[in-house]
Image 1 (cartoon, each protein chain N blue to C red):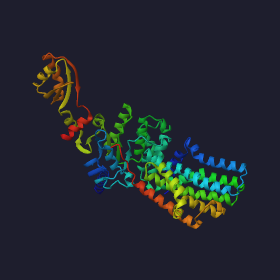
Image 2: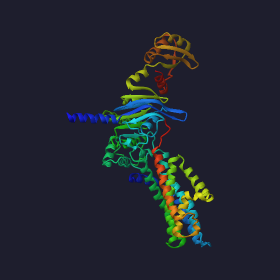
Image 3: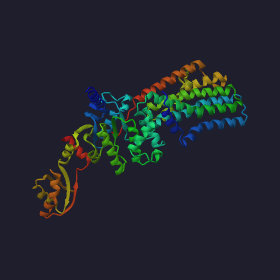
Image 4: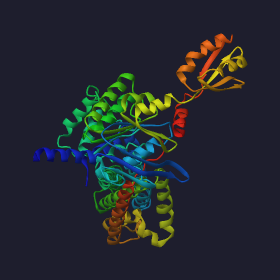
Length: 239
Length: 319
């Protein structure tokens, strides 16, 4: 199912030229905030979990995944270069899976790794806190990119829709409606992070078992839906 | 005897498999009908899909390549419907009109990637063959973003040809090509057609179709206006009534003189000059100077008023 040729093209498109700086920007902000708080000897002992949990899992992770997840497919659909992949006998599910894997990998590089490094800096040691946050961010990278790849196949304006999803669903609805936590990529990530880090300040509302099962279902379901959407890719205009 | 029979059967089966067939194919977007009840069968050789911009050519090609579902009717290639069927691309090569390619790749990388996606046994060799066919081998190691539009077009054609498809669909393939590149591409497509491939290309330029296509399908406003041998359709186009606007020193005197000639069906005086409806383009243009001289009228300007492609197509729709 994974196609190395498509992965190579996607990776080169993603990491080409100045785009790397854009991808690194959210991570740089998180690291700067962490270094500043560490240097300032913040009074609150729970600041690492509060900052890395909120800024890291609510901003850095979804924003980085948004940029990457909507680029790997949405940008190619937007400029029609995707046609050169679609005009081959490669299964659409394979295209979606390959692009999602690349997107998740790059998101881990630009979000999960910085989250881990920031946790190392904040806690001062390579302990459960750092590994927990790193693992949580890895899970978040997978679920978020799957969601953004699906959004790319549903609308020609994936960035706007993805931003609305992050801001409205993850940012507001999951905090106000208790049942919404079962459909929250952020909550899946925090649950896994908390299961390792054991830090109540991470504000996780799901058990790790529930989170992992729901994350797996959400990822598979969104990628399957994206594959199905891509099978019906339609060229319009230019009659 | 058995061998000959088997070979003939295989050839016939291959020919049938490459047949493009449209039966009452219709596509609409909301209230707009882009393609209206078109039926056609395309076999080996080069076919031109001719029509003015917006006529429905691209919509037809999108339906044939599986990127658009017919709203009504059927589209098949080798008996299989291309919609949601990726297997069709084992026999079909597509050159889309849109210029978007992976511009950061070199042409060699781009065409080799296409060969790998088709799972060809030797992708590099297939890519080299395709690059040679479009005469892009020398520039193949430059990123596509440094190419002219014509070179990009050739890279796209090479990628579409890399798996040696039996059917090649090209949407406005000559856009952006210089005359030399255009001639080379015409030779290439003509050779592929003669080798038994089904080649369908769209164009809104009569001369391109005239030089390349054995048969044409003329589409106007979503309908099939004419279909068949190019020469007979061209004759129909040439023999249609022509409209000229003639500006003279004495419009009324020329109108009086012209109405008596065989080549003229009617005249009318307009603020811009004499509008002449000629039944025969050649006879009228040959007689006009003599008639105006005999009438003592000076000719200032003769403008063909209906030479646009749209007017030619509009005539075909009515023919």
